[in-house]
Length: 188
View 1 (cartoon, rainbow, N blue to C red):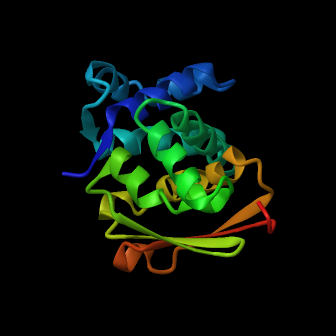
View 2 (cartoon, rainbow, N blue to C red):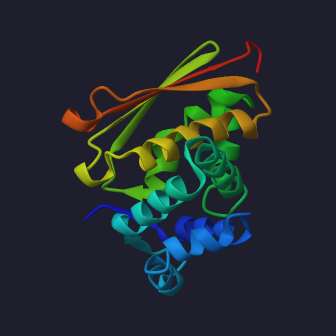
């Protein structure tokens, strides 16, 4: 069963409570909140619960603000006990720029998502591609695309790098594959 780490979902709900569109967001996730609240921090919640959070976010704030929200959530997660060792290790092994973060994508994804697809990251000079394959049919939706796009944006924000993230979704509906392209300034 596809599932998402409860601590990540808890962080999403907490951030929604602080958002300027708080009332609309909380009303839209009313059914998901008890499930997230009752789950243990290191537990897993059904991916449908996470999907309801992502759908509500996209519906209430729109795609651009949703991407920023997801970037902020992942940057926040980088400082938390579950992800911090991975981020520090990636930067020590691969450098302090975006490449160091992107190369650790498969490991970070495994800490947060289970049964939601398999990411593979390739890095060249000042660019990267993240291919996520095996995305379940239920998650082949715009809200999840914006979530993953925001996660790539987080690598740029966390390393204070200027850059851009593009999406290739032609094979998403038919094959469960999403490709995210990243570019950043050389030397970052």
